[in-house]
Image (cartoon, rainbow, N blue to C red; front, top):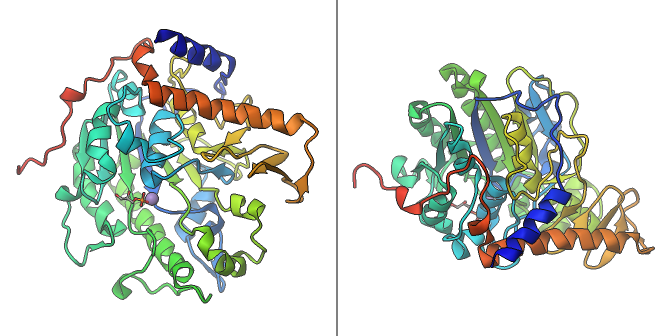
Amino acid sequence: DSTDITEVENYMKSQQTSPNPKYFGKAEGMNVIYVSMESLQTFIIDYELNGQEVTPFLNSLIKDDQTFYFDHIYNQTGQGKTSDAEFIMDNSLFPMAQGAVYVNKAQNTYQATPAILQSYGYTSASFHGNYKTFWNRNEMYKSMGYNEFFDAEYYEMTDENTKNYGMKDKPFFKESMPYLKRLPEPFYAKFITLSNHFPFKMDEWDTDFPLAETENDVVNQYFQSANYMDEALEQFFADLEASGLYERSVIVLYGDHYGISENHNEAMEEIIGKEITPFEYTQLQRVPVFIHIPGETGGEPKQTLGGQVDVRSTVLHLLGIDTREYIDFGSDLLSDEHREIIPFRNGDFTSPQVTMINEKFYDNTTGEIIEDTGKYSSIADKARKQLEMSDQILYKDLLRFHTPKRFTPINRDNYQYVHPDH
Ligand code: GP9
Ligand code: MN
């Protein structure tokens, strides 16, 4: 019923973050390229393995004038992993507490980024070197309004080019370029990398980067595999420059979720040189976010506390799009009004002073447990409220009743992802 959407709409009005006039519209009309960086966690940025940088290209982007780097963004994914991260990025809603929203709620009504950008003349496409039915993407993409889906069928899935779920990142980006160049501009394109996936084992001919030297193969291999992704990204950026697209595109790179689970804490303690308490484990849930904007000055790494849910309004504001019309749980990372209560999908949260893990509050400065004076549980209530509202939207399919101005609702029948040879 429609009273529920009214409640959500009123809540949104009370939560609005005004765009920062310094950045609003600075990338108006540009192409938008997102890269989902498989399993990339923030701890590995600037990390040196025996004096050797693991991600030299990403590290160089931090120093690049035109890149905004955020080092305090927490992943908010649940069991839907990569697909949850995609969902959050495109919808600014939270994924589900159980199961994957891509699998369970693909038929719902959404007002996702590809659909929003359509009314501004954009074409959209997703690129991924795995088959289209994985994570039910071919169904969910219809609801989100993706015009094209370049899945495994568009790539040379040879033994040499693939491992684990599909394409290795270097051939994936290489083979994507001709398709990307053919898209009408402006476009919104999403690249979902794959080879830095658990258990991170590489084919020896693909790398000469050393393994880490803990007792744990998964952890050791992670460094090699992350280094390979970094090289693939460097190659992609070079190809974008050569094609001319680089100068007319905002590029957003984000880590999708953790790569190394708590089963590997012992080896990870060696890596980060600290005991992994619940508080430290939460710090490991940070994922890097880079936004490259031609002609803008990114400055020093930004410690703004945020979640993946905050990226969409940041980007839409850069494009000069007012997000007030949309149901959006995020808050522009570049705004002075940015909200810093970051819910995690399990109901925990972090905020500037305090982090809640399993009903316990931790002081962010000391990492020690602290008593609540009542103040912290009221922050917990605010975090929970956001998750509850978002859950209501998914369970009751409430966006059916929300009608933003300048938005054409998506008709799923207009979308299908069939390779031309079929
Ligand atoms: C599979 C890829 C990896 O297509 O997205 O999925 P993950 O296991 O990381 O969710
Ligand atoms: Mn993933």
